[in-house]
Image 1 (cartoon, rainbow, N blue to C red):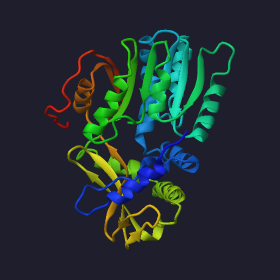
Image 2: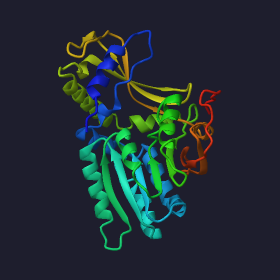
Image 3: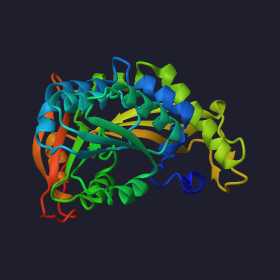
Image 4: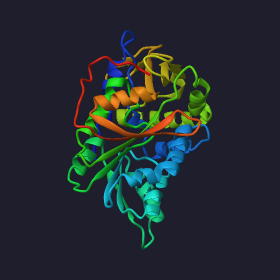
Length: 334
């Protein structure tokens, strides 16, 4: 599989300008084999509530999800990553004795091998009804592959994968998969709805309780960027590591990096001047009304919504509505 991360990195570097919106380094730089191990440690820290909330929801409502699908369903996990979380849903299929094939779609070959081995071990009994395999590729590769699957399909977007972007980008992600869905398909979306100002401490703790892990995560991303660039341009001592919470147009936690000096990229072309900033790994939060509006405009009907206890994290169970609205009409953030 080939992803033009080098080209994306080059365009990001050339886009840096003090009068423009802050460019974002591609998140794919963070998720190489080493970065994924660090990330999997981060998401199971006690303060990273999204993981624990989704596990709680699967334990409470896994059988409700299974009740909506037909035996033989194919489950497609979009950007699967660590599969310890989704195992709680697959356990519900086993408990209900509903057969299913689980396909984990991910850009990391190493992550897939590890994650699928974990699931195969969990579902190795002779009477197991769940089969597991990995799809190594991008969303585009995955969409093309699953178009040939004839069974009903259940798409999963866990950990705010599809909606973790500015409004229109998130809407386009939803549309992308809604357009691939048939009338007997379902989509389960997990989305963080913790908003400012009421949840400031909880959100901040999720990203800063283990700043040592996040620092390792980003420095490994720097190493990955240097390898792609073919030159050593990203050095820890040249950047201030910063973070902030924004309230408008929706709640967003933002990691960003401010250059301490002029940084010239000889091979990529481009210059980042002292004081200019690059965004990396931002996390958008959307409340229930806003997610429902986004789904409607993507042509999706909400079948059910489940909310984690003492939390604003929710899972949205969706199907194709057959009606599509104008995404350019007035949007209010809730």
